Length: 78
Image (cartoon, rainbow, N blue to C red; front, side):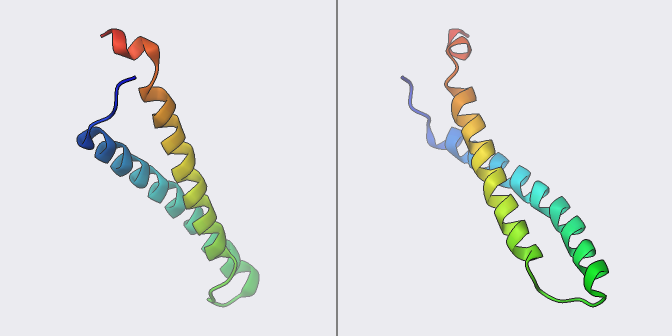
């Protein structure tokens, strides 16, 4: 099995972080506005825990996808 070099690992980390931040950003738009509508005032609450959880789940899922996608046998035939 072929090992990844530093550039490939860095590319995967940058792409994973970008898409994880994107998902977390859109969840934050919804969660913060929803919490504000519910409370009627701005405050820090559980929506920030939701945003952090969504970011970490998205990062793990995207990283797993790249881990399995890069190891596909059909890709090495090229």
